[in-house]
Structures are given as structure tokens and as C-alpha cells.
Image 1 (tube, one colour):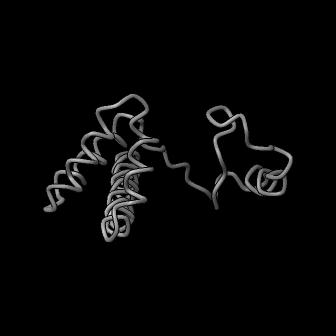
Image 2: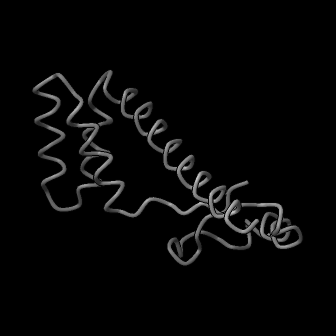
Length: 116
């Protein structure tokens, strides 16, 4: 189950999420809260992806996008025009997100074992 961070994203209409909020509140102990990546960590993920690209022209455009103001928006705009690398970005991002979540689960499991 997913719930947006209303503090970080004030544009979300809390009322639209009310049913989910109530479900979470009624059985809070059945869910785990995962921390999102910080903007620094997400930026590093983009850099790592760009480093993996063999096509010099695509790589150059993405590096330029990361070095300009508003790198997240610029990267998104560039990657959407990057042909096959657009899908490769989504695959890369999903893999890194899964690793991010796995690390949090491992950490929770280790802390749970220490309490025993």
C-alpha cells in the first residue's frame, strides 16, 4: 500500500487518500514504512546510470542536463528523448529502488534480531 508524504507534497489532496489513511491507521502495526531516497541519493542514481551509457552523444546530453539548474527536471526531459535509453533508465531505476528497499528490510531484520 502506498501513501504520499503530504508534508513533502502539499499538492496531494489528503481527502482523496482518506480511505487508505484510515486503513493504515486501523492496522498500523501490520505495515512497514520505507524511507524514500534523499534528493542526493536520487541524483547519484542518475549519475550512476549516465556513467553506464556507452553511447557518447546520449551520455553527453544527460551529463549536460545534470549540470544545469533543475537537474531532475532536465534529466527527465532529456531521458524522455533518449530512445532506447529511456527504457533502460526505467529498468535501472527499478533495480536500484529494489536494492534500496532490500537494504531497509535487511536493516529492519537485523534490528529485530538484536531485540530477541
